[in-house]
Image (cartoon, rainbow, N blue to C red; front, side):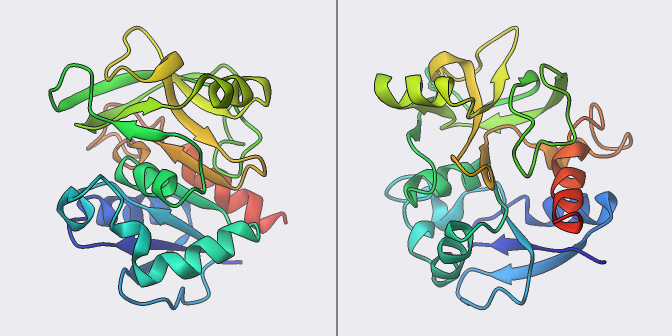
Length: 225
């Protein structure tokens, strides 16, 4: 079975081709999806890539949330389709209310680009089942508005329900509350991640290949479903 993973291109997307390449390296079939088209082309999962959708006007992800393709994605994700938002994609997921909280300006007020150490804490989601609980990985991080924030009640619920997918180690690069680098919804099919696993899938271009399990995990979960 060839798993079809859609990768959305918005105006201003930068990492859509990288995400598609990561899908192919993992063994899946990458399918290009266009922001202005609500046809998901029979995909089994979707990735919202990093970049600056619609120029980050208004708020990061705020305009992309209303793109025609998002109507279909929200409907399918609400029914259980695996959906991964990376960096700007994470911002779009929060704006779409598929995930709680928001991403705000880095506390340093500077754009950050670095190889970031993380600890994977949730291995039950569609996108993280290939990791071991507590596994430490290194993948690139690049953002200007990557600080995850939510009210205390939401943060407590994420902790209590085990919905923190990954946490920053050694340094909190952007002021994210409780060092949160990624979260999942209650069902575990929707994941938002600020660092970029698609840039760590092959030795030639990444600091590690630690990002690969994010993509192999969803392929295995769909094949075994």
